Length: 136
Image (cartoon, rainbow, N blue to C red; front, top):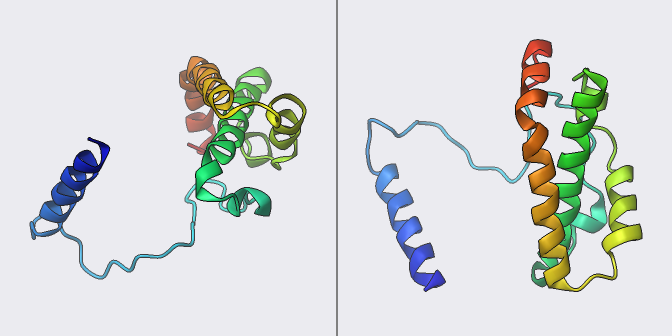
C-alpha cells in the first residue's frame, strides 16, 4: 500500500514538472541547505546526520525536541533573535540522551508526537513574535 502511495506521489510530482507554466528554469538541485532566516544557525550534530536509515526515528525525535524547546523559548522570552530561535543542539541532545536514548522505537515515536503537540501549542504565538522580529 505504501509503495503505491509513493508511486502515485512521484507520478504527480513528475506531472507538475511537465507543466511549463509552473516550471522554473535554471534550478539546480543541491543537498546543501541554506536558510533565508538566521542563516548562521547551528548545524545538526554529526552523529544525527550519520544515523542509519533504520534508526532515523532517533534523529526525528531530537529534531522534534529541538523545535519544541526553541518555540517555547521564543514565547517565554518574548524574543526571536537567532540565538533564541536556533541555539546549539546541546539542550535537545541532553534531553534525548537523559530521557529517551534507551527507549524502544515505539516509545520514541510517541515522544515525537508529544513534542510536536508541545511545539504546535505555542507555534502561533512564537510565529507572531518572530514575524515582528523578521525571523519567520
